[in-house]
Length: 249
Ligand SMILES: [Zn+2]
Image (cartoon, rainbow, N blue to C red; front, side, top):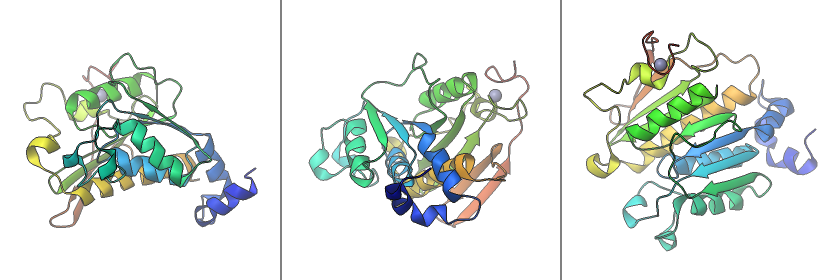
């Protein structure tokens, strides 16, 4: 049962058909891990907190730099030099003090234990971390919602290979042997702030649907490509690689 404060705070979403108080209770019980507190991690953490995901942990060892501020919207000029994960947690607590939220000022690698979480947001900006979040999410049977953005383009996908053998994983589609890296670094290629804002918002939208909505048809197994120049959103059905080193066994 939601208390009066929760009913008031989440009033505009619990009235949505198929969401209801039951959906809000599911969100409040959900444990989310957010990998990266930058351009994607900021909107993901802010909207997840505001929506009432009850338990959130944010992972990032990086510090806020001035060149981050065109897109990493939770970090302010006064925060330059602070750890991104710790700073983002403070901003989220200002929005919603009734959830449990914590930071990890550390490098995300294969040794991180993600078994306690229900849902992983990949908000990293490098292929190495994306392979690690994919490997761990598959192994621990978690929902992985990954985003990426560069220049005026963004990508979004929901990966559930650990939950059903029919679904592909990230490495099925972006094998490590691929000559063309799936993600290009913002530092080298540039990025427009609203693109990360949009993709991060879409990541949380998918998470809310996965966790809270009744009778919901998952979009897992598709890759969404957004072009901010033409306003085109392409939905591509993905095929599992039956020789994938991560998910084929
Ligand atoms: Zn795979």
